[in-house]
Length: 565
Image 1 (cartoon, rainbow, N blue to C red):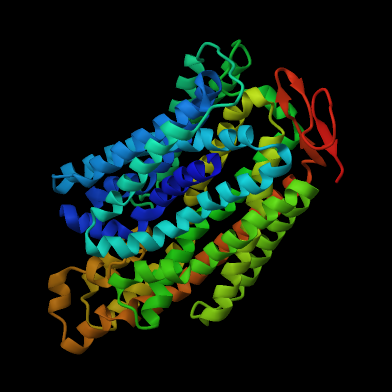
Image 2 (cartoon, helix red, strand yellow; image 1 turned 135 degrees about the vertical axis):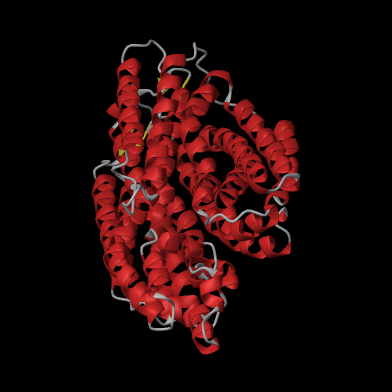
């Protein structure tokens, strides 16, 4: 009962974390707003990242509240908040910037509900299952969460063209069923540790992490004549203030009696290295999804006969082998980790993931799909083999009374790493594009009759505008070149410039350079994650019941147990 309901909640939350990525062109058309107009980049960025930022910031605090007031109570409240927010997203009656602001605010509320769900789901399962079954249970739950982000891509591509409101409406009946079921059937059998709330810790952590994430978000936006905003005084102030507040937060947590972020948990080796490998694997995985989508939507699919408007849906479909790998390896490795421990499977999974990135480096930009699909499958198998045992190893290592806080800490590292990953991957990609894209655009446009002044202006547009145009399924040339300049061209030149092949062939060379740097970073992050995973040590279980600790499988201990299976 707990496994099915909690997995449904996590799956729904993670589907909605990505469902908007593919459906955004339909959503923006539905509210009558062009997201690529420079003044509208705020709406575009916060539509993408608002949900993820708020869920990352709140997940530790809400996990701690679960330890204090009951994990099932907090989880049920999250399901209710999430369902109401989904309904309010559906009934957006406004257009233009007002309609976009409504969607952003409601997405943030939806993110609050998702944070309640994610913060307490792993702790509920850890309470419900004995240690020799947790790997399989947490594996199913974790794989559902990770694969949900890829399932959301396909659902967004299917539902968005029918009616953009369906993107949000689909969560309402599922959420209503799950909420009623959770309130009626779930029971809280975990230990509670009633204690005062660490208000100053919550405040400094939330504001500090928000400032860091906002700084990362706007760092990839252009600033003045610069292609990115990392040198902007505002971005530097946001990052500096955020880091300073997080430093203050760390000091506060060492001096308060009941801290939100339980730093002593990092004395547990299995927890520390499991959380570190969680962070590094999320850094490797998070931004890579965007790179693969842009590769498919901006280059490969148009070169193979797909219109730009259809590429978002087909990009999601062509990435299904990645999801299949998760679904195969996740539960299986979770089941095996119950018997043999997390270390061999989690470490091997990250090595396999790094190998898939190495092999992707050797694929040509215009690849054959079968090798690409096999490498996606290998990457999914590697990530799935890592995720489930690693999550089980982290949760097994936590004392029973700290599972909400510890699970929330682990989720915060994972979610914040995804935002950091997006910033890193887009930065590497933009650096690669800015070196050669302007000259390629200038030459390509002038060779087909576009005036020198217009071609120069378009070639000096920020590379992020080109990336976002491809990512959202727009025809980049039609969107970036003024309509008057295009309509004045002879029909053959107009047809070439606005056709499927011109932009994809134009960007292939510059994109290859940026993609090489992005893959190299992902390889390094995956290998370091593998080292961190191996460093967790042998199998460690802490089943604290009524203040005594007992290993679930191998007898009775006092603090925990190392099981050299």
